[in-house]
Image 1 (cartoon, rainbow, N blue to C red):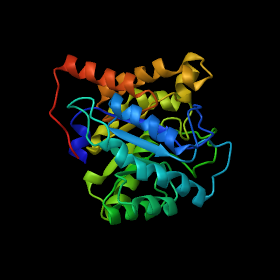
Image 2 (cartoon, one colour; image 1 turned 90 degrees about the vertical axis):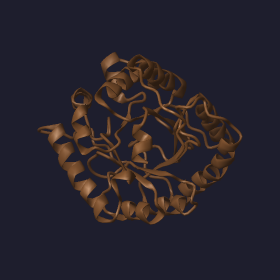
Image 3 (cartoon, rainbow, N blue to C red; image 1 turned 180 degrees about the horizontal axis):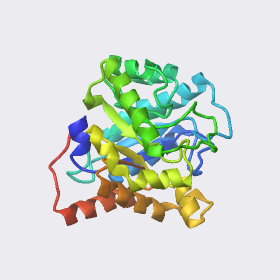
Image 4 (tube, rainbow, N blue to C red; image 1 turned 45 degrees about the vertical axis):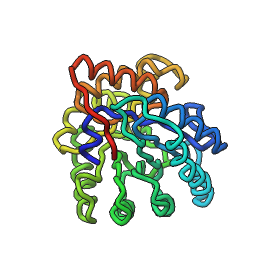
Length: 289
């Protein structure tokens, strides 16, 4: 997985099966969610990241059974969706990988048991070893996101003496924890957690020095899409107005060596990485997981 993800800049498309997504693009209709995923795949998405619970902190967690009930029909339909479509070009991972955005072990276990999920996008920051152990058991890849405290709880007053010192200490600990239960470097992805337990200047510092994450020699995902920090810089309160700022963050991430970019607008992101790759004179062959 590591080699596959680092061979070419990857685009992860965001699909929300919920009715309270911060960007207003969620749906509780599985057919509609699959249609969105299909469009993203055709536009060049290498990974589809499906989430059934909004990460917004101004409302509580949904019931575990409800979350699983939203996810499983999509997971069942995704394989058929890919079988009915074709890759955009030889640069796209094919078939696209399926990621589930969640944090509770009960849900991680339920989705991995299908045998159809490639990646767990753990927004909980790996507070213990359970999700890592589940990924090891099922042979899945684990994305470790930097954050502080529990998900679904606001951390708007979190302060760091040095956000990078805190983040590197966090990743040192979490990578060791993941390796301790048996995950190889081929099964670990890092995410600096833009907007999670971070204020405006923290987020800008993360972008400014993103190269520091490359010392781990692991794939790095940057969740750039429509983030609050973009709205703060540009005075844009509506997330849907932040797509141009999203591309600016993508370009910064590419310059730093990041590997995966999580976005709502797949076409724009996929076009961007292909143009920059062409400028660099970089191209690869067909990429199959």
